[in-house]
Amino acid sequence: LFLGRRAQRFEESADRFVASETTKWVRDSLRAVIDRAKKMEIPLAIFSSSPRFLVQRVAHTLEIPHVYATDYSIDSTGCFSGLGELMDAHAKCKHLQTLTSSLGISRGDVMTFSDDLIDLPFLEAGGRVCVVDPARKLRKLASARGWVAIDE
Image (cartoon, rainbow, N blue to C red; front, side, top):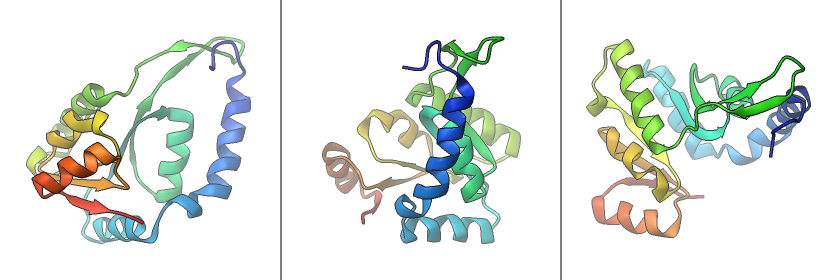
């Protein structure tokens, strides 16, 4: 999808997208969770399989300091040249461990969020789980396990 294309073009598109769409998809209930965590000085991070050039902009808008996302390499001409690290559920777990260690917090004190069952290993890596507009199978599992669900 990105191979051989100019990174700057995608970055500019990401800027426009985040500026125009963030308020539409960051629901009030999710914003309230983020704001409450900030007031309580709870560290926040985004772990996403989406491209870093998009996720960094979202994190900046939400004032979330720690960002873990799929990386793409860029060649000397400014074009995407390959996939770096894919931020799948297992990579998310690895980086969560690194982050919690560096912050000196227990993974049991971490709340993980996702909308899809593919992130199950990541969800289970934290002490508390919250599913956000979950896919059907994840909703069923969340209900069975008593996990928090945010729906809008």
